Length: 68
Length: 237
Length: 247
Image (cartoon, rainbow over all chains, first blue to last red):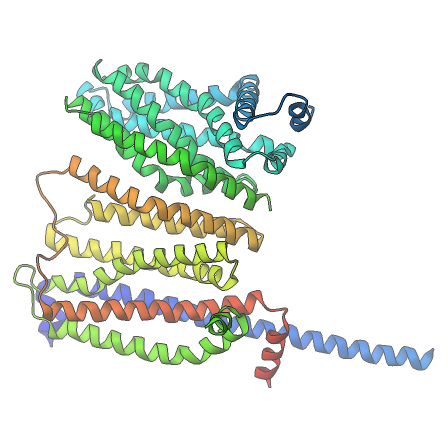
């Protein structure tokens, strides 16, 4: 096992290479997922706000009608 | 300033060549009036070349070794510096849109503007280059090679540069964006331009390099105006 | 046939269909990566000349291949988006760029890490490395141009032109760099290809290459879906989708 990790003395070069590649791939993937999640949350929030706003407007309308 | 289209419609039936020459003359005249447009890149070229002996030391052997690269990189930077002028002025006063609306093929008009730009910024570099060659200790027989390489190469820089400018003309002055876009595209010209000089300095044949540069130039003349025209259309929305 | 094509080109179908595909794509990618890594790091024998260090090729070569492949795929997408005005094609080009740039940078990094133990130097201006550096600038230029233009449609069309100009130049740049390299070749000649690659090394290499390609497809689709959602946010299918999923 330690032979495997030592990579014939080239451990630094080999493991940094593989490590860098896997790290970059991981970061790109996580970033894609995170961005998507954030976007969904933002869309949900703005939709909620819109529906609250239209509900409030509807109440306001009916109040005006009653008074009018 | 009267609209160009009304001027032209008074003449006899116009050929594309007439329009080409008209646009060319107009741009050159405008540049001559604003003399800073061609003096500044020229001075920039000279100054950069002069900086190198100061930076590297005056050893003539070393200067001769770096001369091709230094002169070409300086020429490249000087051309990039001057590129804004191709379309910026016309963009700002609205005549660029007129150009796009003209019944004549846009790529021909664009080629005329590029030719004017080269006459104003590329040709002066070519003319002063033997002097700079001497400053960097290039042997006398290399000086014509230097001029010819710039003759074939600087138009390509203008042609490709026009594409970069056309893509970014709508943006507020974009800093290094345009040079960043152009740098990869300039690599072949730079390689062949300096390569031919290195060959000449070592006394080796240069014909093949000139053929390669001529090929690049032909390709650029054929394709760059089309790409620039397309890019202008996109940038102007 | 046309129905399938128009389904793919339609954002809502694209979104739903790829949503189902992505978990499977991840499974396939991770499986291939595992197999490739095992094959390359464990099964493949050490090289007779380079010992264990050669194993870097199992990530270096696929990265370099992907660097080129992604650029070509962006060029094709850009052409499609310009000619047929298909928005999804433009979205694919946009999301591909950072991935392509990542692969390019990784190719340079792993190449350097391979070069140091093998040829004693962190960097050498040989033809291939130099071409890859220029390719990185092409990617960065594309991303910079897209970012600089505010109007989405203008940005997509301008950057499409840029990449088509770039792709025409790539062979020219490549050959001029090769020629440049032969001019300035020093006495040492670097050999970046293994002479003839043994099958026990070739198979993990191909598996890794396939894994990288699947990875590109998977993460690309993930980012493309986000982009589609963002660009279509005001459309009915998006508002309905968000409402459904919020419950």
